[in-house]
Image (cartoon, rainbow, N blue to C red; front, side):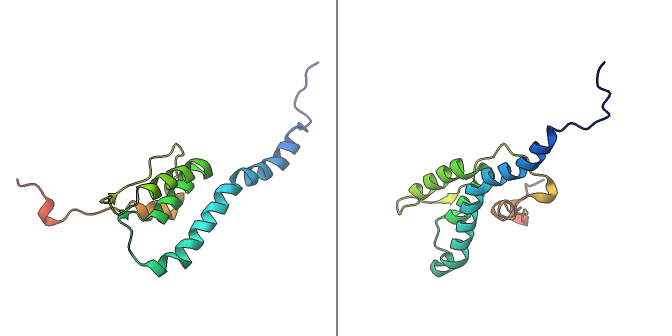
Length: 129
């Protein structure tokens, strides 16, 4: 005779117990880097003022890269950006590449919203009719 489902499966209890622990450990390096970058942006960055030749600034770029791509790839992208930041580079707008993770509209991280502002068109940029 087959089981009719009268008893709940006991295999789900360990999965339900260990899944939050595994997720915490998986996200720990990313969260530590985010905390360090936020601390840098609050304490050290205001001492320099707006001197970055790129938009978004290097620290904002690194924070978005780690948030979107995780600790390893985000650190790699931020290091590449820091290498490009030298006196012979003209700078300009340099956004973080798109990640694979979809963000629900109500939970998009604040750093992504700040780094991708919506710029309204002005009267001079309208095409002539």
